[in-house]
Image (cartoon, rainbow, N blue to C red):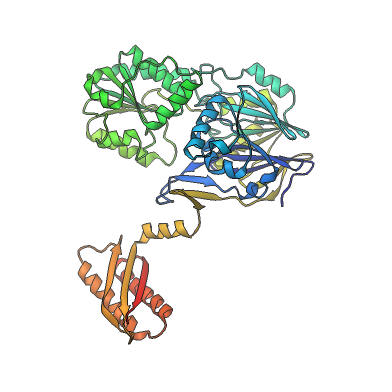
Length: 547
């Protein structure tokens, strides 16, 4: 079993070789600390699944040695799994006020608030966990209170960046300055564990404050009702949208539960206090179309979000020809088709769409190469360990850092046990990592029998066959056959005749052994289906005995 001795270890259980589901462990002198505990969102590979969780088997087996979980910020890929694992891990959580408010809501929803210790750390605050000292460092990002961590250990200091960017006009909050970051670097940083999302971007991410001008211009140009969609967690963007509504004389409406949740959490912590007066969704149609600006969730094409329902026409907020939808967000890779579907539905109704390709209505929350270079210069790490990226992003950041003068870079994957110190940094072992899925209220393996069977059902369809045998092992009555997702439509009766014949023939040829008969029937029915359709469906056979 991997136990940190007189050394400093790093182990990612999620978030390396992938964007999302960030879980990072640091080990020293027999103890572990965790930084972030996130999830990711499912795609078509997981039918019927919305959320994918990290497999924490490694640290669950060592939870007596886990000292705490530190959360850098409130995005789902950094805190989304807390409510599913915190009670079982049984260790305290540490977060800044806004992030803690979001976490508290999740714990309340799961009914475990009273059983989880949630510690609120002030901005730029510090605390200790065993051999680890933590100093929070405020950085800009697309959510409030993003806090990097300077982690002090007997073997050197770590700068764990979290998600970040450089921004001289963040709209809300005051990120750390070059002078503050340089002072941290002057104290000596052994390793920089750094966000790789935009490592290929030759330009910087852009300032949040720069978005307002084109948002204002686009809203002023709109002839009818305006709807803007953005990431709900971006409170600074919501602040800007409030200012745009006020300056264009439009009444503001927020549509989407996640928007209201973020606004409530922000206002509870002193942010977004000067938003203009809003109206609820049901009141929008009582106002002139040129007097309304709606901010809605769903910019990534989520089927159940407000924008998708508005595009379908089954939402209290209505759009019509001549209205405008502004996508103040980027397309997350993998969501292009879903977003395209919504845009096409809007286009069919002659509703204008504006994206970041047509106007400067969005900036990223992650650093491009110029920002990475500045951080390297300020922090002056002896070692770079890229995280928060697919392999190509992490490898590119390692290449860029070395070319920029960083002494060493080590590219690791989920499960790699990295010894950071003492001695030369190296991968010294491999631990099992994986994915779990939340299926309804149940957490199960992402590659177990349940999801594998569901994939087969979605790909191949299902044929159910049931028949009864009398005392002479002959079929009593006729076999009952039901098809689910089998591409037989106009020729259904002929197909059922062939299946029935195959079942009858199999029963005549197999006497006395129920299990052999069931398997022979399954194979016979599947052969018929394959000959008709070219597919190999799941075949479920039920045999009853009659007296």
